[in-house]
Length: 105
Image 1 (cartoon, helix red, strand yellow):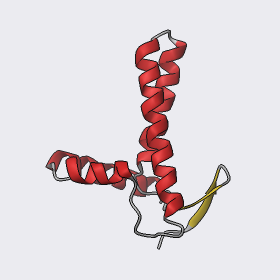
Image 2 (tube, one colour):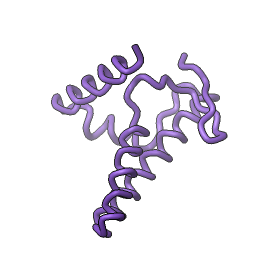
Image 3 (tube, helix red, strand yellow):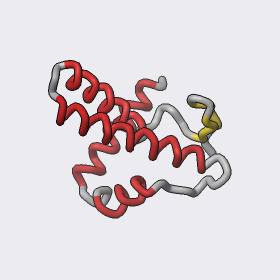
Image 4 (spheres, helix red, strand yellow):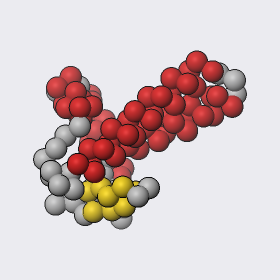
């Protein structure tokens, strides 16, 4: 079972050195903010919104897993049903997991 952590006052159960859509959301949010600063309003706003959705969804999932270890968020379920069966997506997922494990060494 993954360890418990406190993120922004929210208790979550997660392993930091494996890939989470939280990380993709953070990257998208930062890229969106940069684009907003560069006056790319539409793309910046879309990236910020999508990034926030990913961040909130993943944090909510891992918060629920404190009491319900097998809970998966709606976006996690959608990813599993629509994308994970695609070989390239599984390969990307393995690469991201390997990178995170490398960071955790």
